[in-house]
Length: 205
Ligand code: 0O2
Image 1 (tube, rainbow, N blue to C red):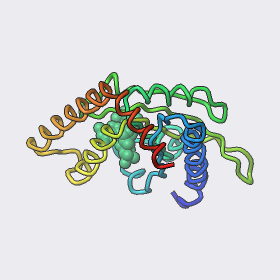
Image 2: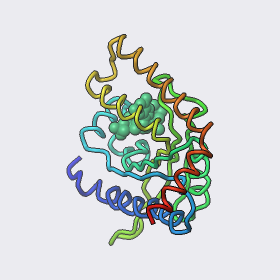
Image 3: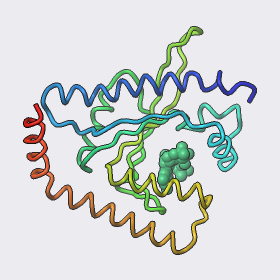
Image 4: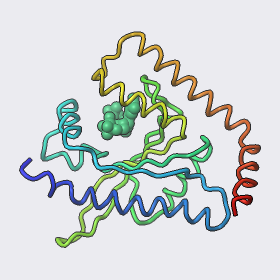
């Protein structure tokens, strides 16, 4: 690729716009004094070395990059409870500022690594001076516990290049199970937690 900056420019624009839009959903809930199913939103454009690495691993050709790599633009929406994920997905499905291309449910069907998350791939129209460009972006929706596990596993993956020592592999599996149980426990006392949070928010005001 001669000019990565030029290629990535609409992706950068999409991530910035989508961060504002998705954070706006949380703002609307809190403005109405409702509990938001979204805790926080992050976004990033995949760094060039990671793009090259993934192209290599998945044998993606440069001229197919825009359609075969769906997560060059990536957004993450973190929720407190597993049930919030469905609510967020339903809100996303109702929007008309982008089109959903694919949904991947790694919560009902976790990955062999132990990874859990709900992915929504969208086609997002970016307005440029040359006209409209439709680009793919991936929104990952997960609980704080799923995010904690994925973040740790991702950094270990980087260190070991996917080839984990058996001991680490076993501990990661156990940590994934612990994160799953944490989500379950939190769901069971969800109403209690939400009441406490309402009380706390009122007291702060
Ligand atoms: P990065 O550094 O986050 O950008 P697949 O062939 O289905 O396994 P594909 O086609 O890339 O993978 O799509 P998928 O499954 O939606 O995965 C895309 C992203 O999901 C990954 O991007 C990760 O962010 C996250 N992800 C998927 N599986 C795992 C996992 O086992 N552990 C962790 N920590 N994250 C995962 P990248 O490009 O891998 O990484």
